[in-house]
Length: 231
Image 1: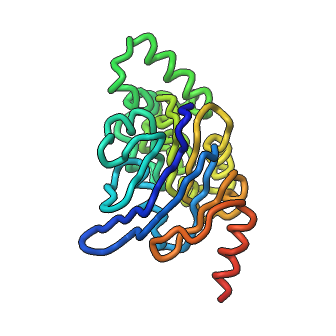
Image 2: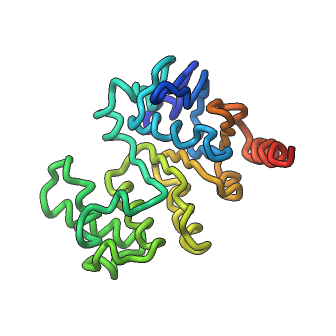
């Protein structure tokens, strides 16, 4: 993994359609696993999209693995993979194997290496028996595992997951979380309403009103969030 911190944000704003979505966000972390929590509309997803290079910041300094997500978009996307809450937005090919292979298209690998990587990914994520199945006919849990497989097949340094377990049953939510948080040579930032998942991470970040209001020990941050919800 890169020696640069996963996140290094200083006084970052994101303004969209004239509205400040993130304001004066300062956050620096070298943690391997980071959870971002907070109420709907608190800025969590915008933060994830900023770090993925999908939404540009309008003020301040932002670095992910030492890269500016606004200026170094192509380099960032080679090193960072994104998983969204709705896997249907990421499934683009007709069959499971073809969809996983699609994630490798930019690498221009030999066909034999692509096939080997696809086989390994399908086995790793429990999808080998479904390799020729229609991707859009899978269950919700299987689709999310397919999206995760497509992210991991590129061996990213960072995986940014925005509510990856929102629409899953308890079993598939656990399986997806286990893959995301496993110590497999990657770092993970997960946006989540699942506070049990947040407490499995090394660091938790609490967003409110477009700001980062607390970051640190997950138990402490989750307790502060739960307390705020009772006020």
